[in-house]
Length: 137
Length: 103
Image 1 (cartoon, rainbow over the protein chains, first blue to last red):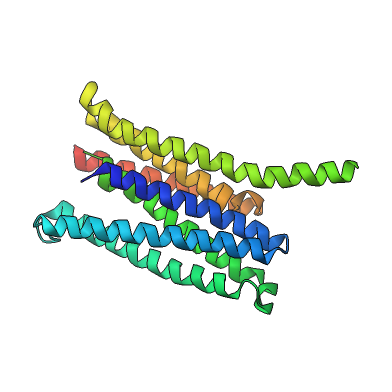
Image 2 (cartoon, one colour):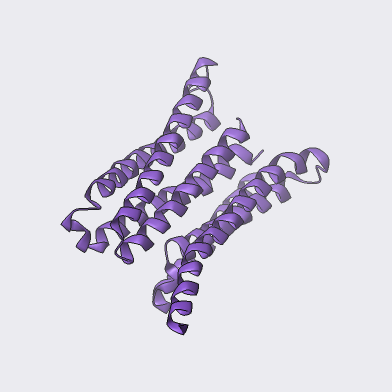
């Protein structure tokens, strides 16, 4: 397990959460153009996280480590796999929010807040998963 | 003029406050990563202490994200209490399970 990749992933998700906070603030201040930029930045952070995760999986599988190798790697692949699924759903939601930022749908702030909270939840899951999988001995 | 100053300060704090929370989260992440690796190598008193420390730092970060980014701060008291109890409950749950499994 490479903790450095884990730290980089954690920092990417924390930064994307910050961007989402700024985006929601911008929506509340009726500035959809700024919100669109911040949602786009969060979207790109999410894509970066997914790319690094998939690289990490391919590295593990290249070394011959599969979910059936042992208990730890079973937990590792399943927990991070489910988390990656949530990240991908969050990325789709963020992409949708980027698209509708400038349209009349931006009257409904609950949509943006839901997307923001879902993304924060994804970040939260990773903040707990990271020490459990990467740092504990 | 005071109104402009008030709006300026409000705007700055809306800009800087999440950034301050992010800096704390960033620092806590780097610290816990060092703590998980170097502490055990250098001092190796007890890997249990390291694990407790890591879980506490993780849930400290979780609490920061829930209260500031997810805006539990602005919620009614009942919801805020439930949120805080959830953080405490899950953290203790994990630590209890770890203690029993370890021993």
